[in-house]
Length: 160
Image 1: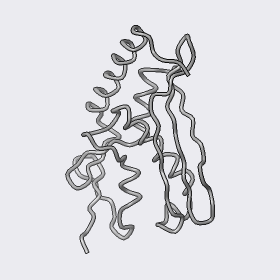
Image 2: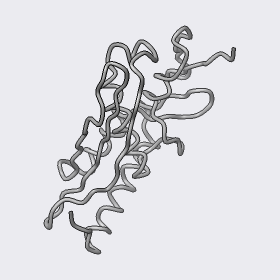
Image 3: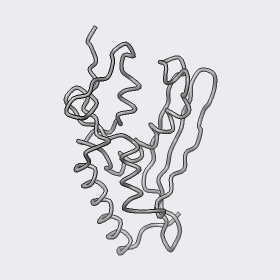
């Protein structure tokens, strides 16, 4: 791996600021859950690609994939003239028996969550929340339906 020189660092910081700003201005891909705004991983990736193109690469590694649980690590790299630089990583671990999502698509859910957390490590988040909407929805009580409020889905979690 290599380190960023001053120019690469300056260019990276500028583009990353553009990504963050465009997420805060997004009209789609932001979900309000219990009064907090969360950005979808899709929005985070879309804005990352919009500003960085293919100079960003994401590698996901399966740490564990058993009948009981799945663990995935995702790493975000910046490609430079001198090689690639690891910018951030994120992990996700879920028990397959947790809910419908983890019973049917646990590996995919963990990969999405790990990518979202790696993006959050770069400050690519909505309203300063590390968790993505996919993470929050995956953790909510499945018996409570999502609602649409102000053109944005809203998840209400009932207290038991």
